[in-house]
Length: 132
Image 1 (spheres, one colour):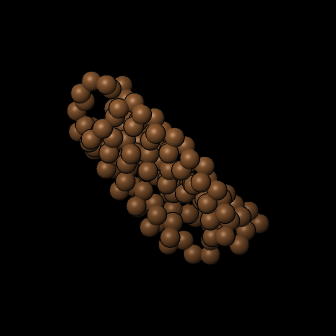
Image 2: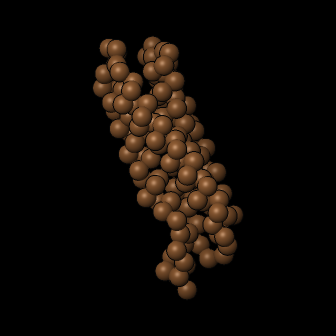
C-alpha cells in the first residue's frame, strides 16, 4: 500500500517551497545592494511572510494524525544539524564582512528561517512515504 496515494496531507511541500523562494529572494535583494545602503522594506516584507508561512507549516504539520513522526524527526534532526552548520558559516561570513545592525538582523532572520524550513521539508518528504 502506497501511503502517498491513500492519504491526503496538508500542502507542507508547497508552503516550504514558497518559504524558500521568499527567503532566497530577500537574501539576493539585500546582498545585491551591499555594501551600499539598502532599503530593507522589501526584504522585511518577504521575510515576515516567510516567517508566518513557517509557523503555519509547523501548525499544519503538528496536526497530522498517524504520521511517521519517528522517521520525520530522524531525518529532520540530521538535516537541521547540517543546515545549522551552513547557516553558522554564512553568519560568520556576514559578520566578518562587516555587516552590522538591521541588515545583519534581517540576514540572520533569513538564515534562521532557512535552517528551520529545509529540515522540516526533508523530514516531511521522507516521512509521508513511510508506512506507520
